[in-house]
View 1 (cartoon, one colour):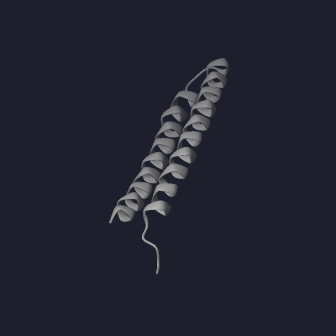
View 2 (view 1 turned 30 degrees about the horizontal axis):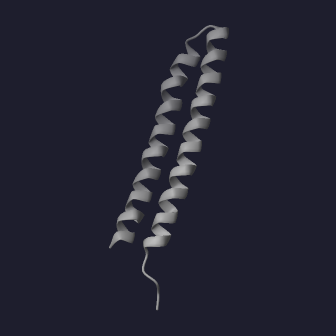
View 3 (view 1 turned 120 degrees about the vertical axis):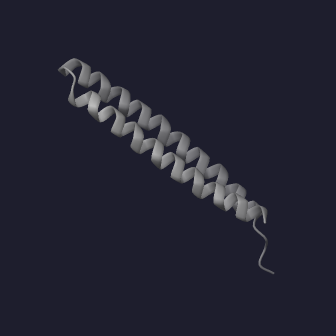
Length: 77
């Protein structure tokens, strides 16, 4: 029972992080296209840093939730 909760949390977390990554890129695409050259460069750098930090958070969350699922699942004996 606890393992299934962790499994659904794992999938929900992945969906949430994928949505956050997509929405972050989509929101900044308009800013990059409608900006001057220096502003577009700054927006690209900021988007890249934000995406990197979000990706690090995503991997850390997946590792933690994946380990919790593996520990909580019942043994097959």
